[in-house]
Every structure is written in structure tokens, then in C-alpha cells.
Length: 323
Image 1 (cartoon, rainbow, N blue to C red):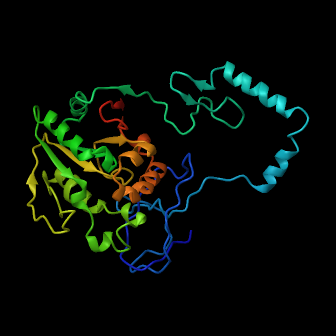
Image 2 (image 1 turned 135 degrees about the vertical axis):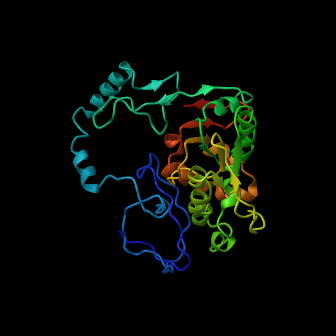
Image 3 (image 1 turned 60 degrees about the vertical axis):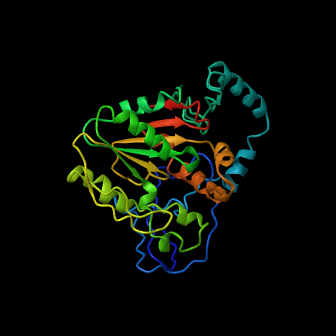
């Protein structure tokens, strides 16, 4: 595998949970190549907790049909194959692997080379409707005992920080609770904005995952201390907040974007799922340039598959919960 070489500071890589997405990934804008200072050019594929893959540049693609295969198939298209296709489709519908009116999801027919009951691009595990007022208490009840590190992951239009506040209020009645905003652990602006303010590849890596792991997630468990923030995301200045002590029963809520797929040691992960269409409607115009990054995150990390709890959040007044 040939690695892309560019100048600059080595950028951490987003770990890709699924190397073959159900849909082709959006093509993000590319820049001219150049050797990056200190970048590992050995091409090693091994990943560890501190070696995070960059799904944007790993170059994984869906397998495509080759010309020879098309030519082979052409020899079978005559002589009754159309009738066979109709009969096969009728059989699929009879056995219940066609359109499912209850879930409104089209299923792949029970035909050769397909898995029985496989859905097309949609996870079939059931969601259940829940009132927005009851959601914080329900999520608070799912937090494990002892020191529990909870991720609340979602795009800015889903307002993960605001949901974290309401969960904290519900948790506080029974145990100590602490909140950490992931954007206070963004990288220094000189690194984040090295290629401009609207660079999509950089945006996927604004979070300093290593600092969040070291100063918060591992420290709170090992020494019962954690750093509440690192720098102000608006001014880029150090917040200079001292480390805080965590009670052995503390629920630590970390809210922000792109928290999953980085092998961060969370005890419970909550993902706020917002469809691309809803993201486009709810994202302010001056932030619309970030939308392809969330499409890439959905395709490579598949947060709806890896999160412990998933909340459909297209309409925040009427959420649906799975898990």
C-alpha cells in the first residue's frame, strides 16, 4: 500500500470500522501531495489504541464488476432468463423477503449470492418511540455503576452538548456526574487550520483523541483525576483548568462529534443519528461545508452499528431509541 506523502505535522487517522460501506463514499477534495515531516512511510497496517487509521485516505472502495464478468453474463440473458427472473421475484415475495410494510424497508430477495433477510443499507434492529421529556432519564438509567465513561456522539445539528446537560441533571439525583466537551480537546489551531478553515480531511481530525484518552478517559479510571478542558475552541487559548477529582461512582459524560471509531475507552456509547437530508436542513449555511465529512463518518465508521444506544434524532421533539 502506497501512503500519501505531504508536508506538515503528522495527522492521526480515523479508525475505519467497516472497510466496505453499503454506499460509495463521497469523494472529498484532494490536495497536492508532498512529504509530511515525521510521517511513517513504512506502510504498516497494524492498528493500536494510539495508531488510528484515516478512513478518508485509506482508499477502500466497493468491488466493481469487471468487463469479462459482464461478457459472461451476457451469454445467459437470452432463452427464458427474463421469465426466470420474474418467477424468482414472485417466489421471493411469497416467502416474505420483499417489501416489508411494517418497517418500510426494501429487503434483498432470497436469491443466489444474497444473504436471507439482509436489508438494503438500513439496520433492521427495532427502534421504539419515546418522548423527548423521558429520554434523559431513560439514558441516565442505562449508565453503568462505578466510574462510567459515556460518549454522547452526534453532529452539531443534533446538539449533543445540550443533551448531555439534560442527562447530567437526571444522573445528579442519584450519583456524582461530570461533563467534558470534546471540542475543548480540539487540536491547536495551527494544526487544525493548516490547510484552511474549510478543509474536510482536517475537520475529521480536529479532535485530539490522544489527549482526550490520556487526560480524561484513562486518568479518571487510573487515578480518579481528569482534566475538564484543554483549550477554548473559540480563542484557541489554554483554559488552564486544574485537574478535578472524580468520585468512585462518577458518571463522566463526554459530548461531541466524531467520538466513535477511534478506540477510545468508553463504557457506554450513545449516537445521535441524523439522516443526511435532515443534517442538510438543520445545519447553518456557514457550516454546510462540513456535511460531506459526516457522510464519510457514517460510511466508514458506521456509528449506528457500533454504538450501544442509537437515537434517531431527525426530529428532536419525537426521538426513537434503539438498544
